Image 1 (cartoon, helix red, strand yellow):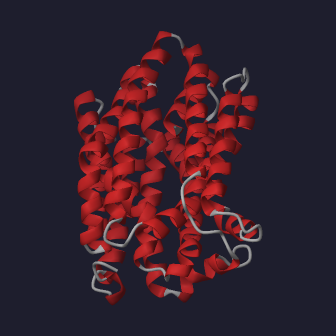
Image 2 (cartoon, one colour):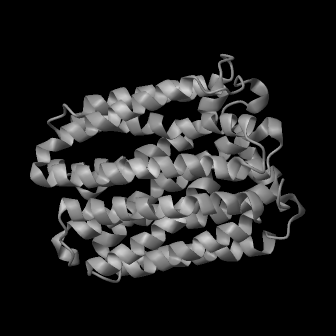
Amino acid sequence: MHTFVLLIAIRYFQPGPMFKAILPACISVGLLISPLVLSLTSKAKIKATHWASLFWASSGLLMFSSSYANTFSVFLLCIAPSLLCYALVPTFMIFAYSENYTAKQRGQRIATFFVISSLAAGGFAFGGGYLLDANIDNFRWILRMIGLSALASALLAFYMPSPVVEAKHSSSGFSNLSLSWKDRLFGWILLSWMCIGFANLMTIPLRVEYMAQPEYGVAATNEQITFVIVLIPAICRILSTRVWGFLFDSMNLLTLRTVLNALLIISIFIFFRYQDLTMLIIAMAIHGVAHGGGNVAWSLWVTKIAPPDKTGAYMSVHTAFTGMRGFVSPFVGFLLITYVGPVATSMLALILAALSIVIQVPLIQHPRLKVGK
């Protein structure tokens, strides 16, 4: 979704670098405020999936509304809260995953979901890129289709079984963040995730910029951009996600994460050093394989270390930290690529990714990470 939103902004509205960074940062704001939202919603005694349904529906309606925008300010006014609401969904869906699936099956169950979503994303990317190249005004129909898809997700989520969000799942406001230093294992994993996440999130929106702008030597069409950045990774996610789901259930969490980080390092290294489409496809194929495992791990890893009644609280902290890095990283990325170029920007990302591996390797043998927990 965010790839199309950013591509539409670049091609149709043509905002400045800082305004481009606002779009991916909106999702991060939603993640950042998730502990506060979890605390507030716990007072209403409503099922977690009903909250997820509400945020999905809100995102869809706002996305649909953005299709009627004729100026970037109106577009941003609709898109920003839409992306924010979309980002709040995982904090509540984790309740359903934890409640309905055992520790030995969560990875494979959620992997099936990601396979289906990747199939849909791949098909949509192919058609969406073609529509944009045929006529840039077709972006309105693309946004409407995304909005309707979110509304359909809201309807399905509403009927999913899940526990009621209660005060025991949260603390007041942002006090859940204290878990990041009170639980030292959790804190170190968060720091490692912060490094790899910052590296990855900093480069994700830059890939669209790198392929779209002629000064970087690629000057790809909209169809080529969506093919390389959306369709190729989607296919690779489809082919690898079930394997990653099995590995998540049966493998040490940080061993798995180290493998994923290494793949991301290889992908970033290749992508920003070549202008040839073949090399860019190879880089994004590797990224897609890593993303397949990353989606499973990101969605479920707190279930491996959090007490059952604190899964929501741990997830809210995890999403908040994701929001922190996600809010800052696009601005840093766009500034760096503007002033020092894509190669230097990717070097910083590679250093951060390597640091994440250094942090987590000593934690692999921690007793709480025993397989099957």
